[in-house]
Structure formats: C-alpha cells, structure tokens
Image 1 (cartoon, one colour):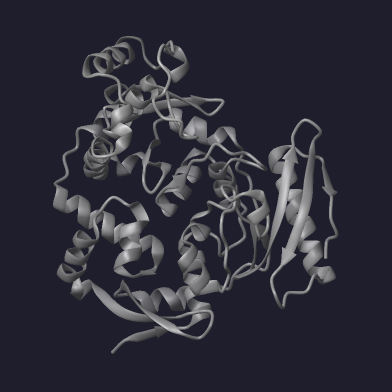
Image 2 (cartoon, rainbow, N blue to C red):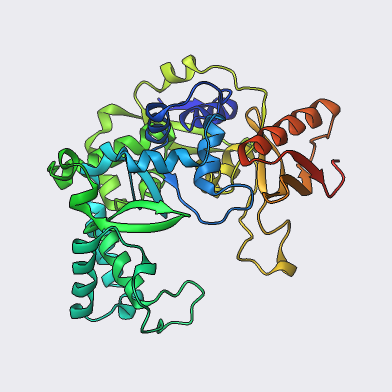
Length: 393
C-alpha cells in the first residue's frame, strides 16, 4: 500500500518542518535561537543586504524577536559553526562530529577544480597557515596583497584568500567570528570545543545520520531530495541507505499543486505526524529568496504552484520581475512577490513593486496584513516609515 498525501497536508507538513506553520512570536534567548537553527538543520549565509542579510531574515521569519547581532553572539559562544552545505551556512555545533566527511569532500572538490590552480605554492600556503596559528584570528585584510588573482571572474579572490578558504573547506581553519560580516579565521583547535572536535564518528554512521536527519527536516523526500539537502552525501550513498532502512520508511505519493502526484519516502510514523498538524497561521509573511522553503525551486513549484527564480544574476533587460524580489506567503499559500529595500540611513522601508499571483485579489484585509508585515520588518531593520513607490494593487 502506498499512502497518498493530499497537497494541502503536504504543504502544511513542509511548512511545519521548516518552522513557518505557526505565528513567529515568543521570547528568544541563545538556547531558543540555537534550537531554531537545529530544527532547520542549517541557515544559509549571504552577504547581500537589501532589507536584511539572508541568514538574519531567515531567522527573523521564525521568531520576530530575533535581531541581527544575535547570530554573531551565538557563534562566539561556540553554539554554532560555519561550513559548506550547498552554500556557505551556519550549523549547530552539535552537528560537528557528523561533518568530518564533508571536510574531506570539500577538500577533494577544491583540489579537483580549476579553482585550485589559483592557490599559492605549498610553501606560501604553509606560511599563511603558520601566521593564523601564531597570530589568529585573522581576516583576509590582515594579509598584504602582493599578487592579484589569475582569474578575471567576478568572484575571483587573491591567492591568500584562496589558501585561507581551502584550509577552511578542509576543516583545518574555522570561522572564529565575523566583524561587519568579514570572516575571521582561526585554527579549528581554538574554535571548535574539544568535546565535538575530537569525537570520532565512522563514515557509515555519518552517512546514516545525514540521511535520517535530512528526512526529518523535509518530512517527505525523494532520494534526490535527501542528497541535495546537505549536499554532503552522494546519490549512491543515499540509495544504499534507503535500501538498508526500508523497514523504517514507507512509500508515499505526494499530490502536487496541479493535481498530479510524485513518489517519495517518509518516516514510518508519517500518518501520526500528519494527524498532529495544526492549521497554518493566517498571517502574511515576506520571506527571503534564500529561505529554505524557497531554495528548492522544483519542490516549491510542485507543492505550491509558485514559480520563483532568483534574478540577481540575470541582465536587467531580461528580468521578469526584479533584482531582489521577496516571495509572499499567506498561511499555507504563496500569494505574490514584492520588491522592497531598506534605506537604513533615512530609516525608511521602500516598496518599489508588488505582483500578486494570478487569482489573488488585493483585498482590504490582505492589504492590512501586508501593511502589518511591512511594519514588523521595519522594526526589525530600524525603519520608522514605509514608503510606497508603486500602487499597492
């Protein structure tokens, strides 16, 4: 027998797993913030700050008492660490023992890529590492740039930065803290608590942990979904894990937004989880483009019928919407997208454009909910006023 999960239930379960089903309120201390990150699995880091940087916006969407300095303080208390999932991310420190294979994977990935050719010589790399060992924590600005990058790519880095990041990918160096979002490196021995750094977990146990914890956070998933969640296991390893754990998994069919269905796997207690779900909050939420619910564009479109693309790297004349456009979630439905920015010097949140989805009306009630969300975001980033540069409808 294959369990069919209705589209509405699938949406609610996915939003619940990712902390977006209920109203994002309540007191928030360091333990609470660490719990949010552990529930999500990781939070993607990003330097772009149109309203707020992605990681800050993602955390604020789960608890609107969150403020930007809180993540830095959590890192300095060694409750989280930075490394690479599908992108640079912050992860709970308790996950560190299960991340050893990712250090090795990332080391090999860099060594096998053209990026490795930009690396300084072994002798120069060792000098850079020795400086961090003796003087750290250091940022890239603590090194004199004597040689320009050999690449003209927009993301090209000077050789010392390439070397620092190589050691960071390999787990030799770790992010000690950030200042104005600039990463400061130190040796892993000085940053990662011994209890986590010295704990030995076999590769097989790491794979099992990564697969089971990906499924826990996804609620239901294909083998490809499990592989992509952390991007720390290969698809073949996922297939071997699902085969070995068949008795703990059940086959399900997920109804899509357009009435079709696709096959997935779920934990054996999936029916109990579905029965325990509460109704979604009716609140309207403005989410970040890198929110974990948005990141997997194919899953987003299948479940919500919401087609979304990041257009930052699309030439302006070819953009359908705008440079940085935020999805709008109302309850368990994506109802539109909005282009907004924070002018922090003037204390103003500017709304440049808004697009409602087909069949969604800009009713007075919906507009009131949008206004309330803009006011909440304004308080988050220190904007006193909301300035509409376009028609609300």
